[in-house]
Structures are given as structure tokens and as C-alpha cells.
Length: 85
Length: 92
Length: 81
Image (tube, each protein chain N blue to C red):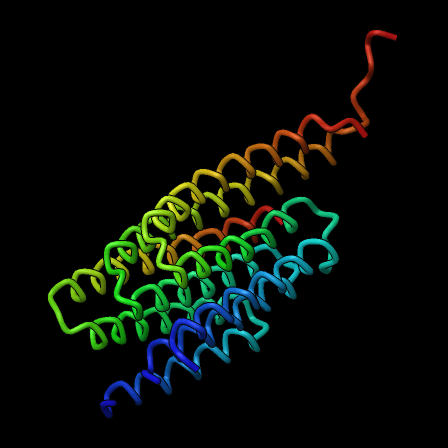
């Protein structure tokens, strides 16, 4: 197996694990746990970017991902706070 | 195969399975740090060194945001459970 | 393949398996810190240029910062719960 195929297969495996974990994972009705499961998918996508030599796309994706987690955490907290039971 | 890609691949797969299977959020964050370790190792082993610097600078920022968000989340749930339905409704 | 890389690789593999299997939360954090030290040494041995040293220094500082942040939060979360 060549080195590029090794990275590509690890990326595909993380994508499959992340998809099934986000949809039917354990205790997924808590929104914070579901948001943590999505982080597996981003690592899989960035490994596939690495395998196809997209250097600039990889750098932009990693940098934007930190800001994206900030927005999602803020949205979850506000949704929990204003939710009427 | 060299040592660094092998260790990084094992870290990636174990971290990916561990993030899904653990249910406590702090355990999930520790496993997510393991996943990031594997990703940085794979980036370095294909000689993209500048992207490795950017990635290792952005990784603690993401971890700290998740930890502060978790603390705020459990504080909000505790406050809501304590004061939730006992407040008198004045308009009716 | 050097003898030094093999020794550090065996330690890193052992730590990666023990993080996955241990149930105690503080002990899991300790193994994560040891694993990041091992990866930092492997980066410095893998790249034979001064840029590799810079990457290893940056990764070492940032991973230590991340581990300390998790260790501070464990105590805070124990107080709240």
C-alpha cells in the first residue's frame, strides 16, 4: 500500500464512523454530545484534503473550524437558555 | 513504513472510535485531543510543515472553546432546573 | 529506521492503547500528556531540517497548554456537579 492510499483510507474510515455516530450514536439526544460527534467528520474531510494535495484549502478549513465551533457552542447555549418546556 | 505515520494512523482510528463511544463530554474532549494528535502527525509525515504549525496553533483554541462552552452549558442546566417552574407568573 | 525511533514508538503505542482502555479521568489525562511528548520527539526525529525543530517546539508548547486547560476544567466541573 502506498503512503497516499494509507491517508485516503484513514480519511474514508473516519467519515463512515462520524456519519453513523452522528445519526445513531449513544445518548445523541443531548445537543452538546451530537455537536462533539460532528468534529470527527471535520478531521476526516481534512485528511481527504491532505491526500489530494489541496494545501491552501486544508489551511483555510482548519482555521475556519475553530471559529465554527465557537458559533455552534454559542447557539446551543442560547437555545438551552431560552427553551420553554 | 516509518514510525511516525504508523503511530499517527493508530491514534486517528482509536480517537475516532473513542469520541463516538464515550458519553461523558470531558472524556470526549480528551479523545478529541487524541484525534488531533493523529491528524498533526499525518500532516507532518507528508512534509507540509507550515500547515502543521497553523494546525498546532489552532488546536488548543478549539479545545478551550469547547471546555468553556461545556462549563457554561452545565451551569445553565443547573440554574434552569433550580429556578425553572417555581417562579410565579405575574401576568395571569 | 533507528533504534531511538523504535523505542519512542513503542512507548507511544502503549500510551495510545492505555488512553482508550483506562476508566479514570485524571489518569487518562496523564497518558495524553505523555503521548504528546512522544509525538513531539518523533516529529523532531522525522524531519531533518531546522524547520522540523520549529514545528516540534510549537507543537510541544501548544499541546502542554491544551492538557493544562483540560486539567483545570476537571476540577471546576467536579465542583459544579
